[in-house]
Image 1: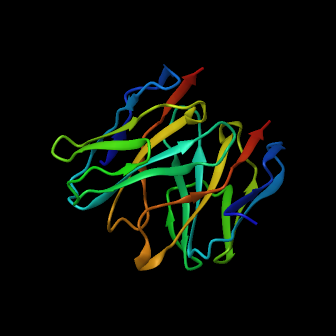
Image 2 (image 1 turned 120 degrees about the vertical axis):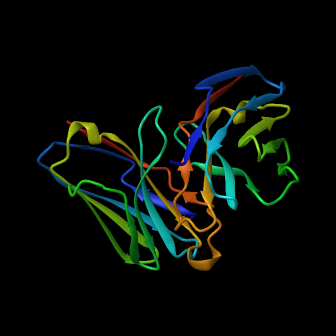
Length: 115
Length: 115
């Protein structure tokens, strides 16, 4: 297994569905992130977990619910999404704690389409 | 507010040419890291090069180098002897050293290397 793995790579869901995105890192890192990437816009940080504790929640709507059961796994639970939530969702990890240098290691992303 | 501006939405050059991507940022912090990340089509975002703001010497990584002008808050990326594999979105980002892991991102520059 290499680096940061995200599943599924593509997801199409209706506005009333409930689905989850999964991220797994094999780098021994202690911090994990969810970003939203939309075309021609800067990456939007959604959530940060450091040593399994959520440290950032950048005013993300409650229809997005993160879960971090351990330092290697991160989930993003989705429910009653809106079409404007369609985007590429990127997971990333970093060393975390006092070792953090800002360098992130990314997964390939989950392309979400909300109909 | 801290911001990153990439003024070139898209650029294209011939293979083997040198290309420079622009990035300016705005911050009141004195200690921070600067980054260039590369996102090839349908592939993972990866770190290209990193610069510590307290270092006067410009960072280099093989064909990639930066021109860091702290007073001007400018951080451009130069790619020498460009290759087809350099085709990608390039994102400039910075993080204050005490930022709780929040990177500030630019909107990206799409670079196309033509054969």
